[in-house]
Length: 152
Image (cartoon, rainbow, N blue to C red):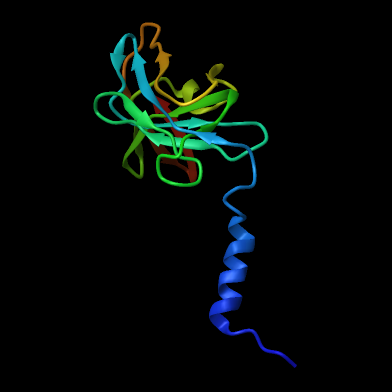
């Protein structure tokens, strides 16, 4: 019986799990800005959700800028028109969350946001609106063994 060295077996298993770098659709470099009511959103993450491939995510910096990553740091996103979620909530404690953007944007379907990536870009713009609202802290309270939500 032929034995495969442990290191070789481990490498084969990792290759099978991650797949070949050349398989799948082409990923192109994408970066840009997120604004809310015309001002940079300074906290959160952008998540672009292609229907048939891995999501691309980018951390939003204090200037509203982000760079998308799908498989390798900063590699970008697949081309196409895709739904987008903006994850802009900050856990302040186990009972409180600060929302830096309206909660609806945290869900790619409910947000109704899409981006079109037709090639490499460093100028993708995502514009959000408060519609009269502003950042708020949401508190979760335990009452009688049940958690209740109350926000401003």
